[in-house]
Structures are given as structure tokens and as C-alpha cells.
Image 1 (cartoon, rainbow, N blue to C red):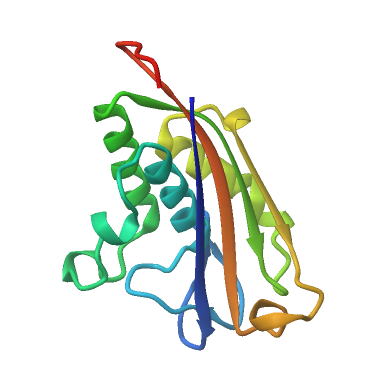
Image 2 (spheres, rainbow, N blue to C red):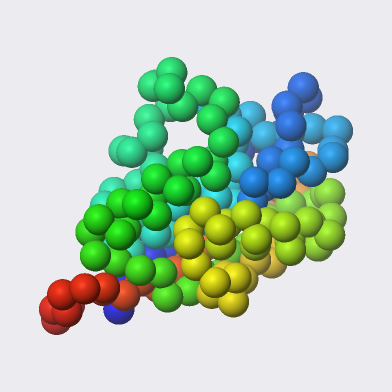
Length: 163
């Protein structure tokens, strides 16, 4: 078994959609980034890529490549799922946290779980998503940005070998 962790943060700004877990959340601001800036999926992808020792999202989807401008992070996650399979790994479980002062995430978490589980081809029971605030502290607490953390476990599929 392998374990990986991921972290991502993006600045909140006007005139952008707020997309987390592939869900467009109605809010006055959105996250600034080259892609859709979905910090939840970005943290999950980095955890998965890290556990498989395949680098990070910057290596696979550079923000200098116009092909990724405005792209849905769900599409990128599907690609990461393919990389895992090609390299003989399957997801054991994922646990992720969204850190945001506002808006409330709880109403959107079931759809986020559904989107992410479907993109990875895993059962929804293998994925947990939760949210917390920073009690008004720091850049997330002051509403300047949103961050996310994720941890995952992977296991070998096909040919077994000692790790």
C-alpha cells in the first residue's frame, strides 16, 4: 500500500465561477487559476500522483500550456485515474478537507463525492469530503482564498510486488 497527500490553494476573485469537486457553487466570487481552479480536485490529484510517485499536477498539466486554460478539473482527474491504472495502482480511499470561511459547503458535498467517485471509477464509500472554516483567521478565514488538503491510499493491481 502507498499513501499520498495533496494541498492546493487559490485566490478568490470577482467574475469567476466557484467550482469545487466539479460543482458550480453559487457565490459572489470564484477561484482564480489557469484551469477552473478546483482546489479540492487539485489536492486529490496531487495526493494520488504523489502516492504513485508520478510527480504532481504541475508536471502533468502545466499552467503554461494553453490546452489547460479553463479546463474542467474533472477531466484532468479522469486522466489521473488512467495514469494510476497504467502504472498498476487502484485507489484504496481518499479523505479530503475544504478550508473556506464561506460559502457553506455541506449542501454541495454529496454531489462533489458523486462527481469525484465517478471520475475515478471508485465506489463513493471510498471517498470522504469534509469542510471547515478558519474561524476568521488567515487568508482563508478572511475570505481571500480557499484551500484544500487530501490524503489517499493506493494499492497494487495486477502483478503483486513488495513495496
